[in-house]
Image (cartoon, rainbow, N blue to C red; front, top):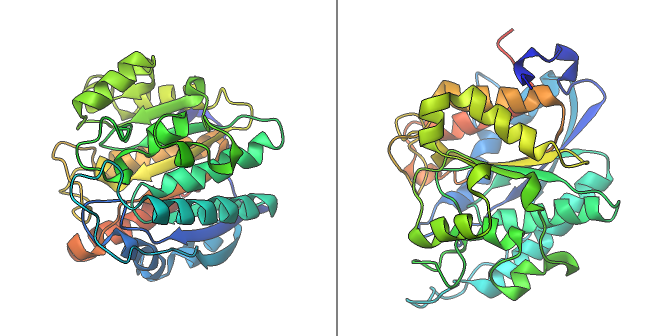
Length: 323
């Protein structure tokens, strides 16, 4: 299906509602700073206006619910731990799940600001739980340079931001896996990953063993087929879910030339325009039920380039176009 040919009436707009929320967690990553992403994106000067003002200009009714409560670690993690800061991550995941469910119950589309990618454990658990209560399944598109599919057994760092995808699939720490009272928050049939270029050996084994190879569109695939073809295939997979799909977008999918403000930079990523194209395609489907952007680290940014880009990408995902 060629989603680029869909009529403009598919774009979200009037009579649509947005619920903005932040999850200022940085302890799931190996470097400090991503916990500052929520406030930085909110306050970024995007062509003269704040993010929420731009969202309203697209025709949305938008409410900012602030940041979820985060229990911060009191002591540094012990070296060699297979899963760092587990009690704190459990607490914030419970809070995040409840917050995102409240937004969905209000008939709003959650727009979630991170924080490192560990926040997806709580946020998507809440999204999945909301639709499960309605006997519906929801898909997921994961944009990222990394697979994030490590488990406590395969991780080389113990950082939870490398484990959220596997956790949502039902593999890993039992407490995190069973958030909201059930395991397997995503049906593998309805999930797709776009942009991977830096995978651990353990992650490669996980992907192969669980039959997910055809659901991963790597940078090699993007080089060969183009971003448009890869995103259309990802959307085709995720949109098979009856309830539509959620999107989680890690800014490190973008090449460091265009997005230097992230703690896990890998050369050879997608370009500025490829990032916008991907989210424009997503917006045109009219099937996105939640959008999340993560791993913006203002401490590592240059001239606020990455922070402002994050805001621009949110707007593309919500339907902003050149004309």
